[in-house]
Image (cartoon, rainbow, N blue to C red; front, top):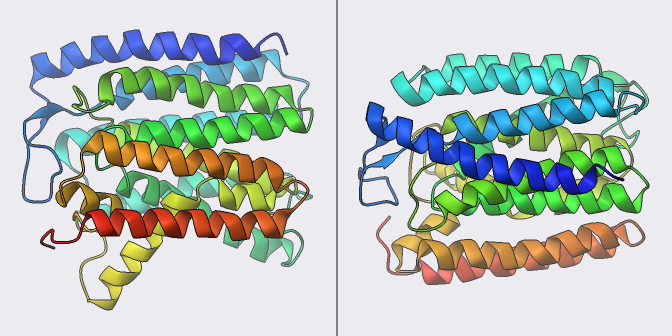
Length: 333
């Protein structure tokens, strides 16, 4: 329990300071995200904040893995750290020079498969409804999709920081409710690093996370969510990321029905519609935060009332999507 405050505070301070240093370097190197017809920003902005945030998270997780060597999760954390580091390197090259989508997807699938290889056979993500092989296949698909959707959803100022802090905080509280200080520490690291980055990324953003942040962070959050599901907290694992899951999946489905390229950048997500309709970045991120606060509470309540919590969570997300769509009315597609 003594490590919980440092697990939050040290990553927060390190992310604030590290992002400031990375911001200066990116400006000097002119590594900028220039606005285009699919952008939600209007001026060139440094891209690559993940170079600060991701190493902070990995260093903190590494420290916790060493301190909590007796925890049954500690061995799996090493694999998660290694996978996230590989994705950090790959995604930084993508941020700088661009990489083929098939290459990125292939590496993501391999890294996720490697992360699952050491997973205990008694931790079934689908709660025993499927055999081990099918369960692992379902977990692999869900994890790869979450990595991609987390990257897709990083499209306005503050949104990824809000989502990371919400999911991390929800999982930290869930771990504490179940007597797992090691798991709580991992979640609090995500909260601290996300809030530290938000100092620089809240609207108007001075720096963007970039793929070198959104991809490995999505990978680590996916690991935490699967870990929760594998321990029987399946309802919480569905509730905490429910807004991101709904917005990304519904948007992808609509694009597929219209025959549009699924991996092409666009501005059709519900939150992007709201911004295009005139709602500011900060307002939209704030609305998502408000809905996420309820999702966090419901995830904790789901320990005793899973189905009721899921129904209320679905209503919460549906109301948010409807509100964002309403704010976006009149915006051109």
